[in-house]
Image (cartoon, rainbow, N blue to C red; front, side, top):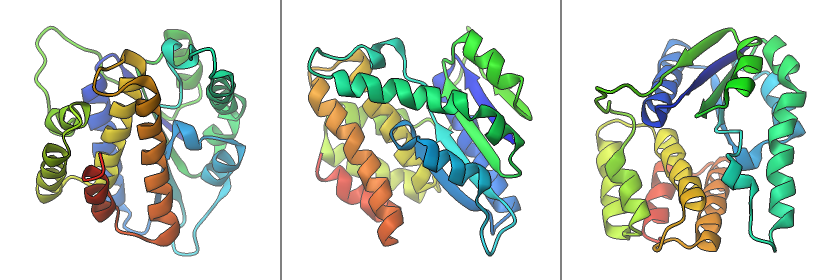
Length: 234
């Protein structure tokens, strides 16, 4: 079953999605949770999300984080043809398997801020619930989107980044949410460009964050500690 979070308000959409996930995990402590970034999206991971069950839990919960590339994502430098094909295929694989994940007994959250209307309409038709958060004239930032954290990464300040990660962890933010914000910022830097983070370095940053999460899962490492070490390497 699909739970879709989208809307023009990126901060609130991301905040509400992670808030929903935290509540679901509290409600079902044995729920197996996995977050898939766009780079990890393929037929195999989608099949796992839709069909797998744990020995200790009746269902799994999968967050598919920002699966659809923006226009700029697919417009790469001339030497990056492979990246263009890769990003396009990752978008289409979710389209191809949307019926399967909609019919799954597992909970699958699609977090897709700024989702195009045509794409949103197709997913909404398959979703169990839709949560949409658009920007309003009077908007106050809620806890969940940590601007100090993403700004520290944008500024490439390892000291500030390490401090903001520790502040957020101390305040009770889940390491998975912090990782999601950092990875979102890495892709944002790729899309918008930055003097501090040239395109190639921003792309490497995004890939390094994906590798960090995969290595943490594979080796059973503490994600919070991995994020602290990452901050000191920026």
